[in-house]
Image (cartoon, rainbow, N blue to C red; front, side, top):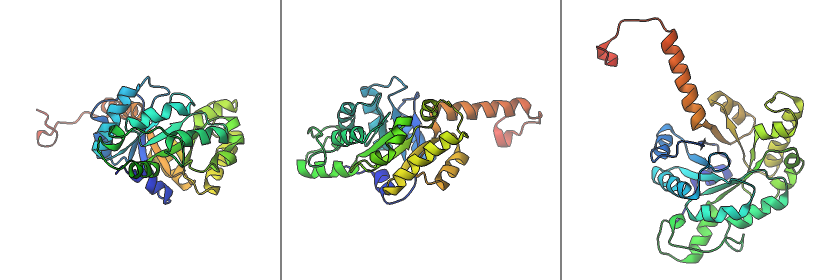
Length: 269
């Protein structure tokens, strides 16, 4: 039966790490992430141009590599979730959630009855193309799919407590750039207004015993966020990681003093 170890660990109070993917949707993406120790990947459809066929392929690669595939919807429309779940996604993040009604609609779209209203289709990608009793598959899927409300506006912060209290909503996610923009202070994360808003979202989630997630720029930021109570953490996105690592390596190569090569160590002539 279908299972989601990330959802299980998060709901048990543990911390999980992964990456948000925007660009490099290759067969090797998920195995590379797994080799690095990532537990999940969030496939972004909002900013990347990724379509459902690409999602379906990436979900298959991720599940084969042993990491959990999740998807950020391109817009706050819960009706987009069921086809992505049928394609193999094990988590759905809906952007720009600003009310409890939106959060309830997301839960309804992602859960089979009696917890929601997801349509039934079996023997497909989501259940490994296998036969089996429908009721057992429905129950297993309801325990596997992670539902995430991405809160990224002043209106969403005002409704944070109501959103967090929605039954079946598993996690809240802090959308820090859009939130700062909504507050009129884009990118100014040290401003008291932003810090108060982010703290309110975190506290709303924690008060309901639910994890809260965030995208950190690097490991140091992720450690700081973990200390502040965030338990689902992306370490940047793949473009950022490649760009910044390559930039540092090039700078080191240009700036380091020239030394004789060591063919026994690095293969130089």
